[in-house]
Length: 390
Image (cartoon, rainbow, N blue to C red; front, side):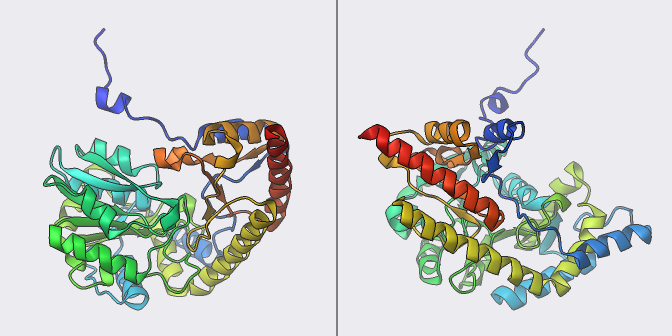
């Protein structure tokens, strides 16, 4: 029988995040610090709106672009949070999570062989989505000494005559790094000069602990060349509702909508009604959760300092990215031993790109109680590793 599979799909590696959690799910007394999912329930008033929409029989398709009311609320949110105006009718599309937005943006914009610049370490889907869209991923290896921020020189050095898109993943998963306004201004200058486009993944924009998040869209000349990706999973603890959105130039959004129309039809209707409530009345919930994450972030950084574990201070998302190079183990070896010996799951840095070697991603989207137990086990584990080296 002939091979039923597409070679280029077979060659894509599966996510490096999942294998540890298939093990930990069956391991008694194990603690997982790996999944990037808030431990908060979706706020009740948001759930209640979803329930109400079901009670009212609002179970039909919405328009392909999404509920008009939701698109209008997204435009209001963009105006008050980043000072940028979008038109709800043709510059916004509601997607099935931010991940679909990334996928259809790449598919709408890329011709075969065009290059996409992907700073790493970063979210696992950028590279495979680029390949699936017919593009060529070009990796920019970020450096710990720069706090994993993308510099203008690194960007300039990576651009060729085939470069079409830069993916800008800040606040960053897995490092927790942010880009401040001065960093973005330098990047924007290169983008305008070289006439390329940006997909700005801002799913963690509400989880910034060093002043308000700054979007590259708000800088001069950038709105017309940027697709902004965001969603409800992280800020509003709505991961299972599977809802995101993209804002951008109408000619790009129109083509994204066409792909979305044929592949998806529309995002879940119940989730869209709930999201309207989230945007209208959810600011206090976001602030409460952000404060809780910030407390956990400071708790972890203090614990790492006491352990003598090197880790730059992250100011975004809900991840820390400690360095484990001193122990002479690869990231995968460290994570595997830590899971087997202390029953704590973390993610090897290499799951997010080769330059993540020597680092681990640890999520603090978990209770302080769980974090305390996990850190006690981590301290015991690294003391044992240091003893082995003596």
